[in-house]
Length: 55
Ligand SMILES: [Zn+2]
Image (cartoon, protein in one colour):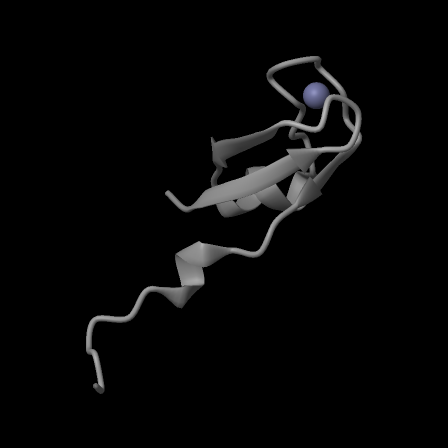
């Protein structure tokens, strides 16, 4: 299950949510700190993972 990073624009905290693609698409994520829906998804580091290093 992919993990997404979010930033709450109300309490200015960041948090991670493990979501299925369906949950992610349905946009049901809320801030676990204040319950706000005013959140922004941060850049998905999940996709930046590489198995090879071309140093
Ligand atoms: Zn919040």
